[in-house]
Amino acid sequence: MNKQLRKAVIAGNWKMNKTPSEAKALLEEIKPLVKDAGCDVVVCVPYVDLCTALEATKGTNIGVGAENCHWAESGAFTGEISAVMLKEMGVQYVITGHSERRTYFGDTDVTVQKRTRAALDAGLTVIVCVGEYLEQREQGVTAELVAMQTKIALGGVSKEELKRIIIAYEPVWAIGTGKTATAEQANEVCAQIRKVIAGLYDQEAADGITIQYGGSMNAKNADELVAQPDVDGGLIGGAALKAPDFAAIVKAASK
Ligand code: 13P
Image (cartoon, rainbow, N blue to C red; front, side, top):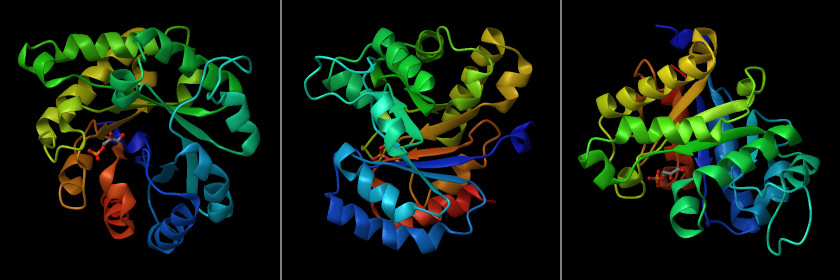
């Protein structure tokens, strides 16, 4: 009902794909295809591709994001990158809490909160990922789990800061598996997350926040997913690596 109050955001999450030269080539292909987008377009790329992506997208409608950040501004954290570093480069977005970070690299709700805090403090817009494993869905705890992930990630985030938060609902069982959530399943959980936001803040905040769906979204299923009343775009993995597919998803979200 309040979908028109929000701008849809289509964000590519390139994960650990594309060398800098490949990143440049892909962005040159994407640029003309999305230049008239009626939604926000973002590419979240590996750290080593950020310079290339910022250069290639200068003066375009494509925003650039990183895929993670550390919570400290600087210090003895070998191999890590801080939000302040990203901001100084000109990066606008960062993903926190992606299920691959949670599953393979020990991220927890608490570290997701810390990363989100640091990113907001640095002035970035944060795409906070939440989502359940298949076993959790089968046990019927999806709503509770996703509510808890959302609440902890947003601990200490003010209503003003919430304007720089995007939530991505990504059911883990749908990521990279080709098994998309049905449009109804995606909408149901996005609506539940919106209710959590209304409880934490107020209805205005809930109506204004962008909540994406992610998990095997592609050129074929995007239309139906992004048309759902509580789904405000998508976080796209595999299909973001093919310019025509990514552009088709952007087009679907521009309607
Ligand atoms: P796929 O689109 O490849 O399923 O990945 C989704 C995802 O994890 C985006 O963050």
